[in-house]
Length: 206
Image 1 (cartoon, rainbow, N blue to C red):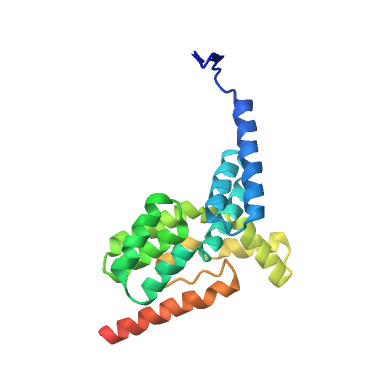
Image 2 (cartoon, rainbow, N blue to C red):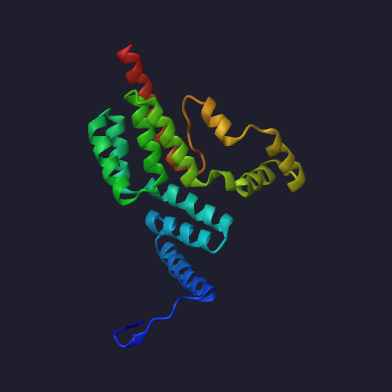
């Protein structure tokens, strides 16, 4: 087949791999220029996953989640949640997820919103979706690194400690609330404040 006088040839596997490598290189430059570009971080994670670099992909995806905390749109949604303006928060989250369906932070906020208005089955489904999108199950290396750095453990000892722990999914299933400490420490007060506001509202309504 020809298009504009140029023969169209199917991409070989090597061609596709080179193309993905070029995409990764461009995305790496983009996130180096602006580490808070959550879209670029997510795209980098997806591209790295296409190259079979699961660990690097997971780290890019985690960086995307951290970067979302600085996004003005997401800050506005969090403020609406804190003010208990749930209709405004829901409308903004739906718009966000239409344009960025893999935004884990937005999915998690939508799960919280669903729980607050009594849609518990929707909330559970959204939390599972957030876990799937976040690829939490492949972040074992990050947990190992933390254990080894914090406690001075050998890799073998750290692996035994992780094996003895409940899985993240089990802990999330048992938890009433979750505070994510995987990002910047500066992001923690906002999460604590959101929970504080939620429980104050529950107390006022009871």
